[in-house]
Structure formats: C-alpha cells, structure tokens
Image 1 (cartoon, rainbow, N blue to C red):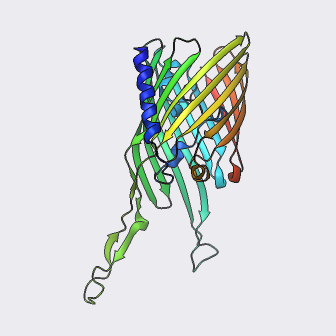
Image 2: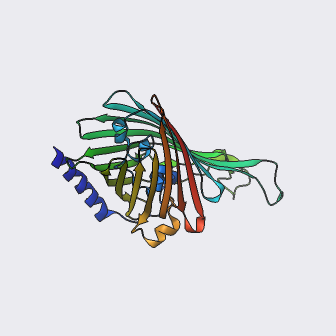
Image 3: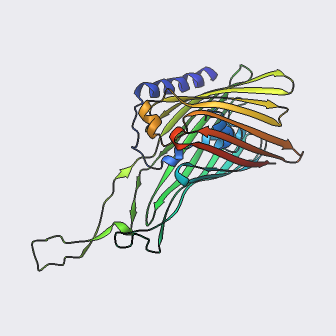
Length: 343
C-alpha cells in the first residue's frame, strides 16, 4: 500500500509539471493563494508535509488528525497597498484519529471616499472592498502512517455594491514514510465553481430602439460580467526531521507548487527548535518562477523569508507567539504575527 500511495502522488506531480502553464491574471479570488501564518511563511511557504498546527487547514487539511492537541490561532498581517490579511482558525481533536477545523480567511481593502467629476473633493460616501472565505475541514488517520483530509469553503468577493460567491473543495494527503522523520504531503486547493460579479451598479436603463422616438427609452437592463475560475493549486512536498541532539530539532522542508494561474515553482524552508520553546526559521519562496509571474503574482511573496517563534507549555495548555518577515521587493516588507493557544 505504501508504494502505491507514493507512486500515485509522484505520477500526479509529474503530470502537472509537464502540462502546467503560466496564466497570470486568469482567475478570481486570488487572495486564496496568499500564504497564511507566520510559521509557514517564515519557512518559505513549504508546509504541505509539515502540517502540524492550526493553519494546516489552509496548507493540507490531512494534517489536522496528526496534531497532538486542539489549537486556536489568530494571525494578521498588513498586506500590500494598505490592505490587511486576517486568518482565524480552530483545530479540534475528537480523538487520536479524527479532527475538524474551522477557519475564516479575510483580505480587507479598507474604505475610500467616493469622488466624481462633479464632486472631486468627495461625495460624502465611501466605498469598500472585501474578500472572505469560510472553511470547514475534516481529517482522519486511515492507518498509523497515512492520513486524508478535506475542506469545503464558501468564498465571497465584494467591491462597493457588487459581489460574487463560489464554493470550493480542498483535498489533502499526508504519509509518514518508513524512514523515521520523513513525511510526504500532497494537497489540491480551490477545486470549485466559478465567480461572477453582480449588483445594483450593473443595472442600467436601455433604449432598445434608439431610432424610434415613440418607444420607452428606459427599459430596465443589466450589464453581464464574465465568469472566472478559482485559482486551482496542486502542491506536493517533503519534510524531514533531524533529531541529532537531545534538546534540538531541525526540520527541512520543500514544496513543488503547480498553480493554474502562475508558472510551476518551488518553496524551501528550515525550522530549528530548541527544547520545544524557541524556534528560528528561514526559507525561500518562488524558486524557478517565471519572470513575469514574479512581477504580477497574486501571492506577491517571492524571495527570502525568516521568522521566530516562542512557545511555553503550562501543562494543561500551551501558548505560542510567531513572527515572520518577507521582502516583497517593490511592495516593500511584510510582517506577519500570530498568537495560538492549545489544549
């Protein structure tokens, strides 16, 4: 069974690498590809085979059932051009083999005053935009080495009076190999319906026969917008734990990422932990990505990453704080923060 699982994942990955294309700007709801959580982003976004904290609902839901405790996490970051990215997640362990996750992912664009040619100083009204995804995940350990998980999402995007919505599904696999410390993860994200904007600003009076002065020139009509697919992403990754000293642990990790709206690329990362209390992390995101994708990527986090984490176990519960730093080039630097509590 183990060989069949590994062979299937490798075949899927190879097929995706062969047929993947760069299609920047061809999908909606691209906030779904923005990496979540300072721990994962500090490791270059290579997290599909690590998958052992509350943010695994985003990276690979099959890891939920491998967590040792239930965990609640709140993470935030000031994203590009004065937007804010927020993620809240709860991973709840039913027993040793079953777990669920509930999460909310939001990109808030804030508010801005409305101006018109007649009122260039403002109309007194404000417009806003917001992206939101609400997710429910479930994971189960099928064997002592193999786990499977899935996530269903409700996705909305809103700009002023127009909005669009969609449903999507994530499916993840996690395999603990016979080589102690080596894990193999795979995840496909955002397989779902298309999104199409609609709203009252698209309603317009239409004169269906301008040449005839006797008809009604204000028949109610509506502008029809195009439908756009979601950013489908397939990820396969490896993680390896090195336990060469009693109080030290080193995790090396890498992901191959095959999206439908960018070129195929790789992420790599490392985490060094001391006494399960202090963690130093580093990585690189977007290796081998095409030049145009680096300029216009919705993920906008290609390059070196770094971060730290502090965790303290109080016995009945633990608390941890994580921070990550990413240099986005023309978009300056991004700092992410999170606070987690586990029971």
